[in-house]
Image (tube, rainbow, N blue to C red; front, side, top):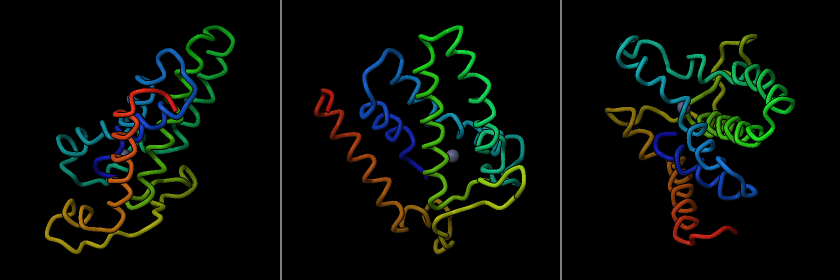
Length: 156
Ligand SMILES: [Zn+2]
């Protein structure tokens, strides 16, 4: 997914019950895994698919959630809902990345990048291949839903 992670977090928070800090938690969780693009470009020089970094590995985040959510539930209950929203937005990011990009859903037992659809390199640049593939319509749909909810301005 190229462009719709941030609006997907917005939609997720808007469709959830109201709560303090839920929107920021959703927006951060929805985009956080792609912070690895900095490492991808400036350290690894694009040599390793960034979906292979730990921030794109579902098992890593499942372990972090399994550790933090019970602790918050017992000792910091007011942060439990924002943390759950954060992890839900992270999961949404990984699911959306699975449509055309591939995610290590089997890690650490498999190094296969699971993708729902393979986007062929039909254009000179990979970004153009993704923009002109039919799966980009889903991104436009997420943007449209986010803009609709934003313009509507109140909860549904
Ligand atoms: Zn990503």
